Length: 215
Image (tube, rainbow, N blue to C red):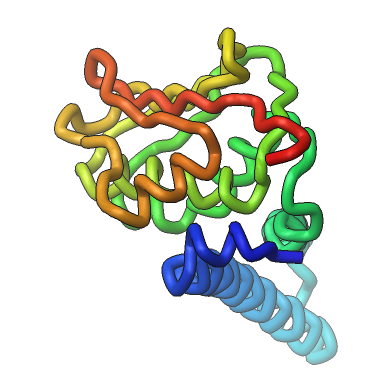
């Protein structure tokens, strides 16, 4: 469940963030369903032509079936991301694998990135175990990604690495003018995570600390 600290930290901004992520996922699902419906219609047209004695075109049939299978797989992946996202507030503070949380954030921002003409990739590397607040971490990643997407088109490689305090996420590439998120809400969110977001040589670096059990 979402705790009082989560609510005091995010407030209305948290609801806006949650709604924005769900809206993006619903758009992706609608696009996949539209493509599935379009190719199902093609299958029906081919079947109707075959019933009237026209030879069935195996290549067109195979292409339509392949497109349907591809979009079913895509929709399933999108729903999986939405399910993981919806469960982030279940346990307010727990250990996570930082790379998995970053991968989820990138998946949720795929549509926004495409609209902004920004290519997001997760750089190779090992995982980092971190004791943190998963929902607040997702919101902090959203702030960083939002700053990068607003800066303009480009390619951004996102890397996860351990640090002395816990772990860090480095967003390298993209438009150089991308600035760390600032403002009362962003500052409160980062403080609740024991985190800092700085610009480092053109990259955004989100440094995260392990949160103690009594936090």
